[in-house]
Amino acid sequence: MDQAIDVRHHIGGGWVESASGRTYPKNNPWTGETFAEVAAGDADDALAAVAAADAAFGGWAASPPIDRQRILLRAADDLDRGRDEVRGLLAAETGCGVHFAGVQLDFCVNLLRQAAALAYAPSGQILPSDLAGTRALAMRRPVGVVAAIAPWNASLVLAGRAVVAPIATGNTVVLKPSEEAPFTGGAFWASLLTEAGLPAGVINVVTHAPGEAGAVAETLIADPRVRRISFTGSTVTGRRIAETAGRHLKRAVLQLGGHNPLLVLADAPLDQAVDAAVYGAFVHSGQTCMCARRIIVDSSLYDDFAVRFVARAAALPVGDPSDPATVIGPVINEWALSLLERRVREAVGLGARLLTGGVPVGRCFPPTVLADVPAASELAFDETFGPVVLLEAADGAEDALRRANGTDFGLTAGIITGDPYRGLDLARRLRAGIVHVNDQPVNDEPQMPFGGVKDSGAGRFGIGFAAEEFTEVQWVSARQDPRTYAF
Image (tube, rainbow, N blue to C red; front, top):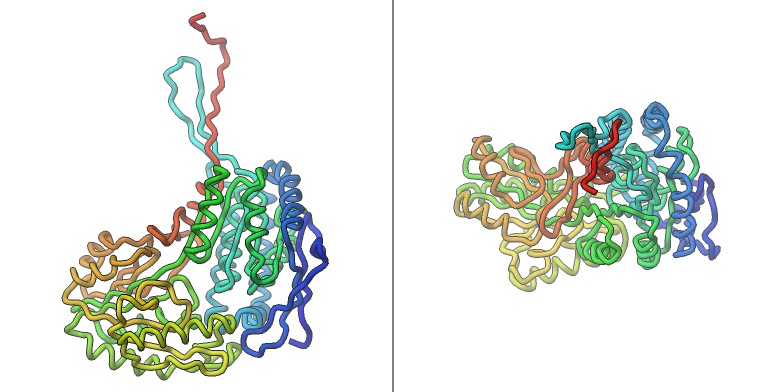
């Protein structure tokens, strides 16, 4: 890009400086050049955004469904036409490669079009009453202001998912994007929806400098005008958000980390298993919460699988994310790069075997495969965001199931087997919110119930399911004739 983008808060329909006047530079993870100069917001900016969202709520909640539908469909068309530009922005801001940028664009165009139908979705039901002459209804109503906290890694999708369904169901939103994706995960959505006709104050965006997320998030959660929290990110941060929301008696929809297994059973077609594993482990440079972190292979296939898988991994192209041939681009920042290197080095020091990769290549971390990783190493029990995967051998399907369930996480999983009905039976016994039989774990569609169990979160995203998360049920009854009372 020739010059840095100017990213400001979007509050009450306008682009504004931070109250303090501070900014910070957001760098391109591949080139190191400044991608954007970004408003460094704080609690004052968050309060201003909440006030704008609260003021806009009444009018938006009462808006005709056709108005909401037209805006969302117009935004979908605009996004579809702007694909080339958005691909470039995703690469420059987050190091997103051409393939995964296309995945994000497809998802978000479909998300907007499917959400447009929510305006006409049934909003309640008629309930039987034992009181003669009483008509009772259970009505779904928007909750009010939603605080949406989104991460950087799939910035377009995860910010879109955080704001589109709440808006479609009549809520207003304050979006806090990650400091690593303030534009594609924040300002871009405000611009897209506003230009499509969204009224002022329905979407608001507050950005912040690195290390300053806490003040903005805590202000949003504590404000009594905010009635629902939407968060996607790490389990550590999600736990803090849930604790804070609990003190304020607010419901939080949480999609957190994963240590996702891919099970390759004894009857699995080997070529299919290798293909699935390579994609599931290394798509988007391993920087999605859904990536396969552990590949658990039946011992009868383990040696053959390992040879083929390692060879495929080692051959994946590494480099410039704007090059369509690149599979492994840069990790998001230097801290992430050093963490990957440190965790691999620790595992090897504890006795793991490094089969390929393990040493940074410029700003990239190459595809890295380890075997015999000790349980005490961080790679074995904590989510590691990057192109690093562990191989394990299992003595049959029951042992594979035991290994897969032996984690505090429970986001997604995959099972490769020649018998899909057996796979479905094992899926029922996997303690994960999402299981794909004869596919790898990286899958999402706007209409699907996306979310995890255990330390991977609570609640479900997905059009339709989100309508339940971001609305409240109101019991309404009415009588035409007076009721007779006991006294």
